[in-house]
Amino acid sequence: MSRTILIADDESHIRDTVRAYLEAGGFRVLTAQDGREAVFAVRHEKPDLVILDVMMPEMDGWEAARLIRRESAVPIIFLTARVDDVDQITGLELGADEYVTKPFSPRVLVAQVRAVLRRAYGDLAAEPTTWRVGDLELNTETHLVTLGGGRVELTPSEFDLLAVLIQRPGRVYTRMELLERVQGEAFAAYERTIDVHIKNLRAKIEADPRQPRYIETVYGVGYRMRPDHE
Image (tube, rainbow, N blue to C red; front, side, top):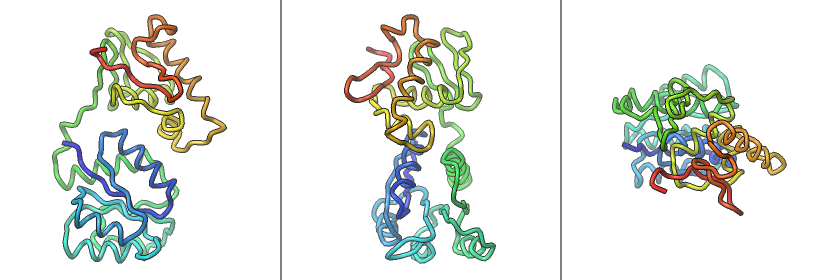
């Protein structure tokens, strides 16, 4: 089952980055720019977990959490740049399940989301950790990639890039999207580094990198993992 996550943060780059990582992890993602939007989304969209920034305009995360808790027991993860013990205690007293300080690793946040969901719903144990297209297989738990049964040695960036592509065969990603998912941020000046990673990845998994069977170039857009049936 795909769970729905609501991200409420007034900083667009944080919303976009967290959204990218969560979607790559198979979650459906909703976003809100402030506490009022977050409360509205909880009431009408019924997310399975809420990520709330503490300091937001219109209505801060504390007040949003108070209103949400009057109506729902949905798990809440607070995001904040403040590290005071008093703030953490306040968040926990409001019913927060986790308290994450900025700056944070998007990958770690996704892991925390999964852990909170497991505690709250207990239904994520069966989530796939192995992804397969043709003879190519990737396991996100063991960090192992095999091709025709033989192990393929990848760098961390190559593994992350392949993990994004193989989990959504047929889905076209722009270079900026892939850069954001692999590095956690995206700058136009570094956009072409994705081409280098793709070239190196193809050299390791394609029988003929000039006629790729797995990673296809979509000219003028970006790249995609070619589905099995094509």
